[in-house]
Image 1 (cartoon, rainbow, N blue to C red):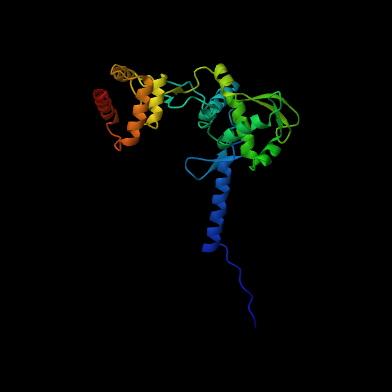
Image 2 (tube, helix red, strand yellow):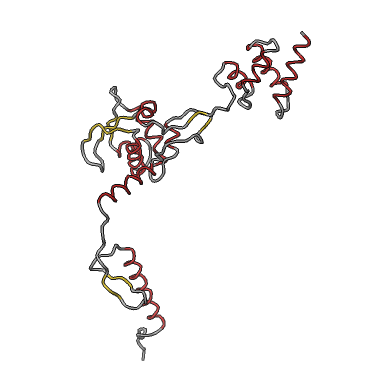
Length: 266
């Protein structure tokens, strides 16, 4: 006579484990939901459950402040200091490199293509889905990139048709030169050494002759001019000595000795 399989008895180890797992999942699900008067909250002793207090919304002005601060952090908006000095001039890419959050990596690409696709009046009429397909990207990062550009001021909304989920919007990309005028103190500075004359023709020529490895101080250039060399001769000697010299450390000192040797032979 065949016997029927018996079901697991209530209270066995397997049933207790399953019940415990259900309780844990239920507890974690409740923790993830925002508290409301209809939901429950665990007490400090970990045993009883009591009704939650209704959530207290912050004042509207606090919401505006928090949102504004978050927007400023996302676009890296801040006033620069003397420490923000670089060998290159400021550009839109410098600002985009400081964007954070969703869409930050797409901001530079969306901004660049906007100038190519904009009409004669400088306005770009495009929907996010079409722009995403054009860039071979997903819609979400493209949409977030456009939001960052609007928040930072590099995009200006000049009109819209449709909704935010796919309607065509009109954006006017703002050039960096125009953006810098309306955002004073937000751009980085070009690096300048104290006592150096990087804007002089001789300084630029010798800087290029050394492949951008050395900058020359103004008082040093004046001393070399006193040897009787013209600026053109100094640049040519620097280029020739740089190509012939195999050592880079102490280049200025050896070049000064080379100039005195050449002058003595004349």
